[in-house]
Image (cartoon, rainbow, N blue to C red; front, side, top):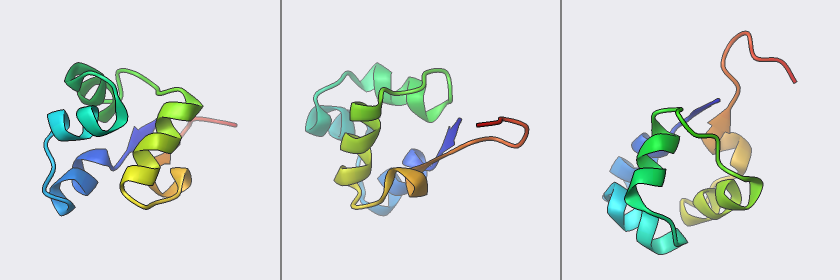
Length: 68
């Protein structure tokens, strides 16, 4: 699964640490999610999306070849 967290962080002038602190996870978790090494839980995905005032679908999306 891909995401646009890094782009949204830049748009909002936030560091990974800032995002992590605001949603209650570690900076390493945000880093792993951004790099696609970790797929967040539904609750975590919603928290991140709400932080950026986006829908989950606007922030996270399947890569080509990934099926439902």
